[in-house]
Length: 282
Image (cartoon, rainbow, N blue to C red; front, side):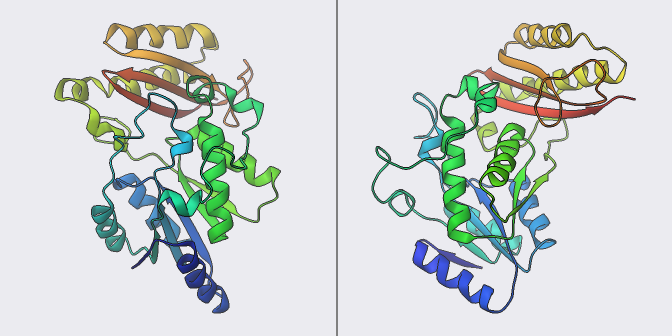
């Protein structure tokens, strides 16, 4: 695997692949890679001849008081893991490469109003930052396909919407969430959890599972279902931010629907956890 740190080197290598008629898949990450990230790379190998991964902790998607400064930066370990996963190229730029004129007067991609709910409501500006950096990476790599984890479900839908709205010739593939044996969704932020918090953390997945079970059992009192699990999480020491039921495209659910996604976010100690679960009812 080759590692490059400049846009010029990235473009030079991708151009050589294009000249050889080879397809390219992109896996954007913020590093501190875990099994879920590596699954994206493995899946990418089935979609394209070449796989590019990026490691860039994007300051635009962190709000004031969030963990940008302490977000784990583990480039050497990430390189070793990507090598094992048979990634072809790692692009690991510094901020000056991505935002050469700084962030204050930067052209940005603005997320549609529909994304002001859920994560958008609790992390103002987050999705604008995601859309902006992903559009930059798409422009630099010009991949045929890009892969994202379904744990960040609303982010995945945003990127699909952006690609459609801006007529980008890129296929977006969502990859199922990787979990620990107790149900906790893999996340780089899980390492912030202390031992007792780690013991409690799977309750977030349990709450989603309870809502999904209710939907499969025929319940359509959406607000009550969500309120029950919101209160259950609060009773277990979480600071829940939302528990919500939506259609798979994130529009509000209705009583006649048979496909749902249940989404939740909660703070445990100082760690913010998010998760989601699909549910089908017949």
